[in-house]
Image 1 (cartoon, rainbow, N blue to C red):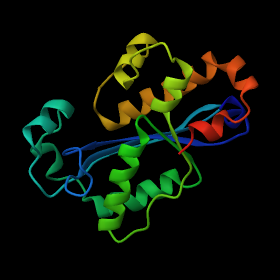
Image 2 (cartoon, rainbow, N blue to C red; image 1 turned 90 degrees about the vertical axis):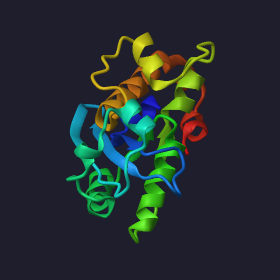
Image 3 (tube, rainbow, N blue to C red; image 1 turned 60 degrees about the vertical axis):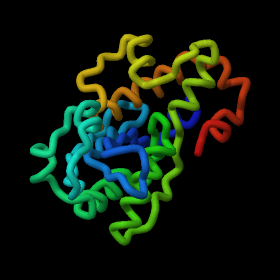
Image 4 (cartoon, one colour; image 1 turned 180 degrees about the vertical axis):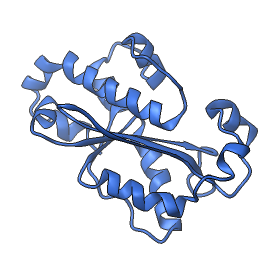
Length: 190
C-alpha cells in the first residue's frame, strides 16, 4: 500500500450514513469524503441528503441526524453528480467498503446513473491484515487504539477522516511486511 501511496495516487476516503442496513429499501442520509494523497488532505466533501422517507428512531440514535436536519437537504439525485466529480480518478477507501459501495451504487441506479467504477480498498480488511491479533477492527475501536481524535462518530465526513487516518496508520505500521508481500495491494483491494 505504501508503494501505491508514494506513486502519487489520489485517494478518496468516504462514508455514508443510512436509514438502515438494506440498500434496496433504505436510503443514504449523509455522504462525506476526504480526498488525499501522500502530501495530505486535498479537499473534503460533506452533505446531508433528504431521503424522502421518515428516519427510523434507531437511525437517529446512531447518527444523531434528525428529520428536521434532512428535510431541507438536497435529494440524492442532486448530490451524486457532485460526489462523482469529487471522487473521479481516485481510489476509494471505506471501512467495510462493500456496505458503502452497495448503498452508493443502489442510489446511483435509482437516480439513473451508472455504478461506481473506481478501484476501492477496504480499510476493514486492511486493518485485519495489519493487526491480525487485534480481535476488534471496528473503526471507532481502531481510532481509540491509535489515539485518533474522533470528533463526531457516525457522521459521514468525520468517519471518512478517521478511515483515512486508520489507512495511513496501517501503512506505517506494516512497512516491513509490505516489502515482502508485493501483492498486498491486490489482495486487499475490492
